[in-house]
Image 1: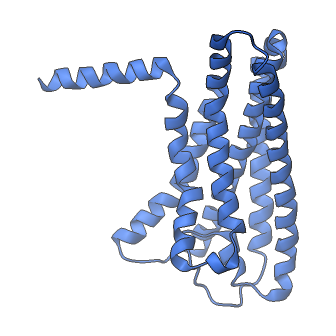
Image 2 (image 1 turned 180 degrees about the vertical axis):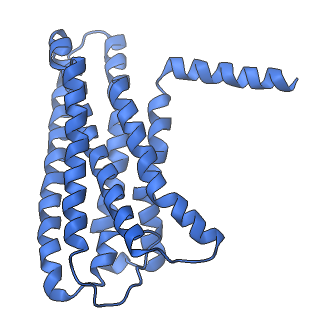
Length: 255
C-alpha cells in the first residue's frame, strides 16, 4: 500500500508542478503568455501524470480487492515484484497516452489565432483554435480515451462491489471497521478525481462561461492531487503521531 501511495504522491506533486508555478508567475508578472514549446510540454506532462495517476488508482483498487477478498493469496499476487510491474505499467500507459494525445493535438494546424482561454494549456481549448477538418482526428482519439476511462472506472466499481460483499459478511464489527478504513480513503480519492474530471468535460453547454470554466479547471487539475495526501494521512496513525511530535518539538524550540 505504501509503495503505491509513494507513486501516487509523486504523480500528484508532478501534476501540480506542471501548471501551478507557471500560473503563479503569470499572475505576479501580470502576463498570460507561454511559449509554444512550453505549451506542448505542459500538455504532455499534465496528461502523462494525470492519466498515470488514474491508472494507478485502478491498480490500487485491485490491491484492495486482493487484500480483502483473497488475503491468503495476497503475498503471492501482490509481491514486491508484482507491485513494481503494476506501477511501471501505470506509468508507461500514462506516458504512451500523453505522447499520442500531444503529438496528435499539436500536429493539427491552428488557424483560429493563438489565444487559449484558460489558465493553462488544455486540449479542448487548444482544439477550439484548430481548423474544423483536422478537429475530427483528435475527436476520435478523445472517444477512445473516454472508453478507456470508463473501462477503468467499471473495473474499480466491480472491485468494490466484490469488496463490500465480503466486508458485510465479516462477523466482527472491528473487522468491518478495519476493512472500511482501508478502502474509504481510496474511494474518496477516486470519487474526487472522477467527479471533478467528468463535470469539467461533460458539463452542459449552457453552464459554460469563462469564470465557471476556470473554477472547474482548478477543481479537477489542482484540488485532487493537493487533497490526496490529506485524505490518506488521516487514517495513518503513525503519520499523525509523527506530526504531533513535530509540532511539540517546534513548540519546545520556541519556548
